Image (cartoon, rainbow, N blue to C red):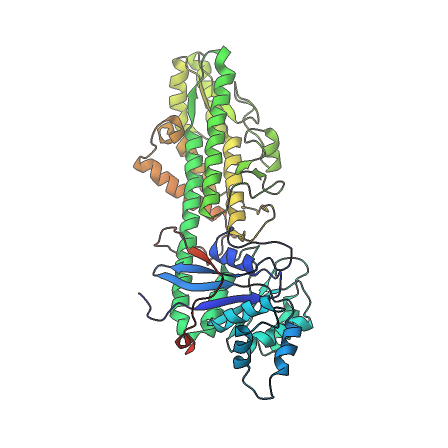
Length: 492
């Protein structure tokens, strides 16, 4: 339903280096918005970014320069004000004037945007102590006559003291405070930001509710697309088969199979990063050892399995390479010996279904390379750890990904992969389309099992039914001057 009220304009304000641009990056899911740096006054101009819902622009946010000397500016302005004066006209004259002979250009940009906005998010670095400069900033911003919502940033790191800030903000008459860490993402906390804005701007409550609903649907669609991508990789890997040629070419065939699986995993990693709007090359070892979208620890290296707590189980298979991820269904044996070896393979993989085909191949003197079970476990574990980390990563983060536990894999994952092993025609790595209804059903069931394995990393707020597809949710444009002020916008 299209709303008749215009979308709200929200100024994002605060002291230098409190994470204003970082907040917008995370809310917008855009790691390229603005410039983030430890140097003060990185943001020099006002820049707008739109958050979209199903009907268009739900909210327009404005990134502003950092306030640097609110104490001196307040002293200057208050010289011209008599007790009981309305401060808003004085702020307007300052904005239209010479800005203290150019001394307060940064502050003038902030105050101009405040006057042109419906409300403000005052971003606070919760690691800092409450200082006189912060009280001066809050008084100065309040004199613009717009509602202010304090937002405590960096609350998930050591040294944060949100309780002290809440107490001091209450002394300033600001009792509605929200916390949202721009680095450690929390979907519930994001929802609370929009709920708080709805409370400040009651006329926009329906719009904020629509935005939250749209974001829930997007989040669930992201999660489902990600788990389907991982499920597709695992089904393809489980069914991967390649005939083994004569001994002189056996090592080449093994390496070719490994390369196909490595590339399949790289493609899955790339897709996961794109789904969550993260760029390749943004991560470093050691937590999740990704390098330019690729895993630093090789899929077939025994150390990878040990690092993930996986014990290899393929060394007992004739022709197998223990810990190296490729096993051999041996051929050319007598029927009796072949049955014994086939039974051992079936017990190792849990592959009762595979036994008939493997035995038939051996009777024909054929050798077939398949992916070892420890490698499948590495694939599942690494992708689940990556997905769990992406779900909790804010788009302002510039540090290496931190792996989260993905929990114990549900039994359903092993059961579904055993079924996939029995159907190499489902694997797209074998050259087929893999698009049968049975294959698609197993991929969907496996995606559901993978999502269950993420609990409790996926919050209940993120696991809501979804009807929409994943789509872009932001647009941004540089803006040296805010749009013309419409006084009617503030008759809330």
